[in-house]
Length: 443
Image (tube, rainbow, N blue to C red; front, side):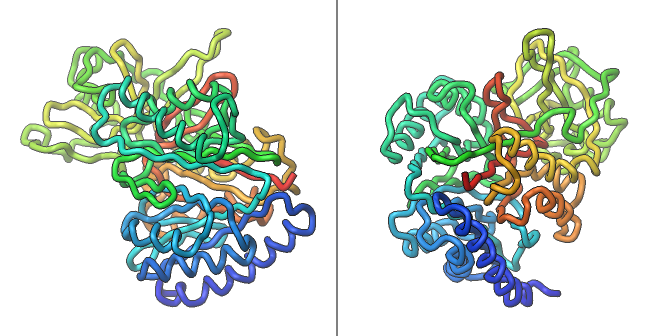
């Protein structure tokens, strides 16, 4: 079936499914309703309208809409069309890479794709904040600037400092995720529920704003259960090799650039650990940063962190680029003295994780599967493309695994360049090759 045929036939099928979700949710409880829509129309305005038609089969007047927009679309046209069609609706979202996905599959069009999730809950409060982070460099300034966006979101929800939301949905600025999470944790405490994805391209959406290199967030204050799941570490499809490890001995100009491991150029050490996987790079004549994240997703680096009581967790970092001086740019923050371990990704485990994270979110929210009404999934693009490839058919197993655990309820998702979540008892984390999920209950 070609793409143009999918545009004609599948939305019609989605309208029928949307009506089914509506009857199931309404029959039990009208406190909260959730619906979704998507489109791959080559015209952005028509794409928004098609997605809204689907969404409104289950949610007539959404109070909140989460939008995932594949980066080939014109974001300004999409957000303008949404705001023209939605009245008194809070809008939040960000760009994703390659495609969007829903319970009906992976959606990739000739030009682009988008997915919407709408929530109608009259007794809930929703607040949106967004701010330009492009000129902010130091950790302290990143935290202060992020705090202003957080305060805007709280005010936009009609709340005040000290009111802890049911969940915080975030789209952090790439390379600035950790200080942003520190600001969120400082505002709401380390037990706040967080679900986030770093945009594949640097665009975020906050109500009627499209912000390049921005940080956006949505704070949701509800009276029904919300659960979050976060998968990052060696238990999520990554096997750590304890025999291949080294200590960071020199950093570059920021906390993402590792210059040396065990006193040697970081790239040389990493390439040796990978048994020459990157020999194809002409490192001696390299003049510009060389992107390797798609390949490196199969061979990430792992660091341990102390959980207390003699327990340790792990966080995964993907090598993103190689620099001419043989430094490596990683997707998470690091410092001198850390020990890094070489790791290998396991394809089947990456696929299974797409369903396992739903289970984790249900447990986190103490939600019975029969009460589940919808969810949002951020899945790492490095894990997806590096292990499965960039073909729709090869990515479909991720949707299949998610569907198995979603009990027939709608969900949307996208491929992101970093994922954020909360580990209960230990605070907020940012990782690579990860998954982050939020699920909603009707009770």
